[in-house]
Amino acid sequence: MRKLPTLALVTLTLAACGESPGPQPVSEPVLNVSVNPATPQAGQDITFTVSLMGGSGTWNVALFNQNPDGSVNQVYPNRLPEGQPTLTPGATLNFPPPDAKYIFVAAGPMGTNTLLAYATQKPLDLEGEGLSRYDNSQAQFANVVGQGFDTLSSLRAKLKLVFSGISKVIQYEVTSPASTP
Image (tube, rainbow, N blue to C red):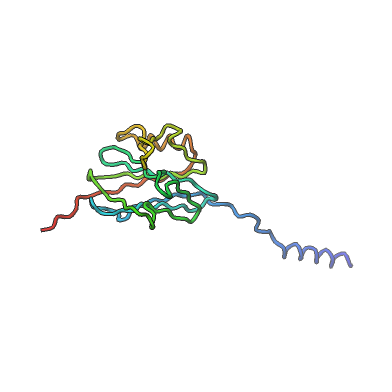
């Protein structure tokens, strides 16, 4: 008779323990990018915002803007202070940074611009991989190698191949300033 109560007590104890939560799985990283204002007028100050949700660790960020004429500018990385940005999950990055001593102004040509944000946990050496280059030692921004309307999609594929990571592409319109009567 004593065996039954002992067995019942062990069963109740095990049931009360349940499963331990253990380590929680890390959600897949998601990169977001936006421009503020959403539809800037030429001559207006603009800010690009990149954020990372999910994932873990530190991510190196590259940011490119394709103009309506097909030319592609490398916004990040650059040689300005804070020009080698990183993100961690839940963090936000602004270009230009809030305390920057410079502004970024929307300019022509008018029309649809395409913004590519790329994040990788590998070190970004875009110049070393032949994806971009600085004109000289004083240049603050690098030029993307190769220009034209297919440059951004080709660049995105090369980035993914060399620096496995995540990306986000958005489009925004730069419009002519409103005329004053």
